[in-house]
Image 1 (cartoon, rainbow, N blue to C red):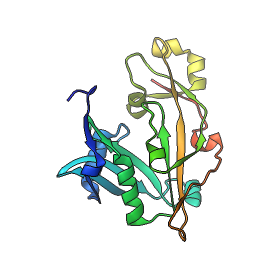
Image 2 (tube, one colour):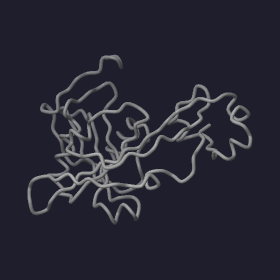
Image 3 (cartoon, helix red, strand yellow):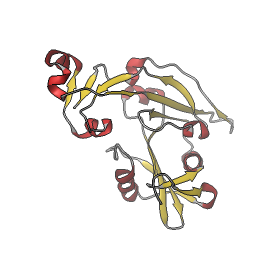
Image 4 (cartoon, rainbow, N blue to C red):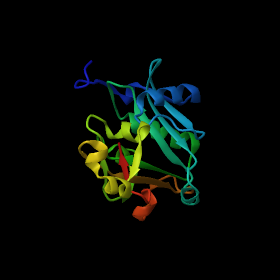
Length: 212
């Protein structure tokens, strides 16, 4: 099946379960562009028979500030390459809610690549969106590869040296993060969406970064 014609699977024909962390991490390393994380996670797997098609991972909020605000962070969600699972994200998310009963869940959405309404389908609401952040990336280098494995320079350094001297030329890329949040009332079984505001400085590093 080509990348332009993914295999379509319907979540109603799949099963979900809290799964083994080792296998979940291997899947995330293979299929999530940022790889796995070092934090202790709880993983929900989406299976079609014995085939693992998707993983969603949750952990305690990873910063002290977010730990004071929220109980749970969704840190990873990914699916097998060449497969589109209709309803897969919401099925994994709802299984986690039923299994672990968190008070609330928040996550970030990187809109550099493909953007979808998957978090809205999970019942989450957008609470903040940061301003665009510019990167200069060397010709032929994807932004994510530059962020993960290449030299990073601050804007003042690049300004002092000149982008052309460092890159040979300059390509503009923009990255935007969105933060989503689901708040659950512990007394009432209904889900309540809590809208909040977050300063841009909370979602961004204080320094502009140049990726080479």
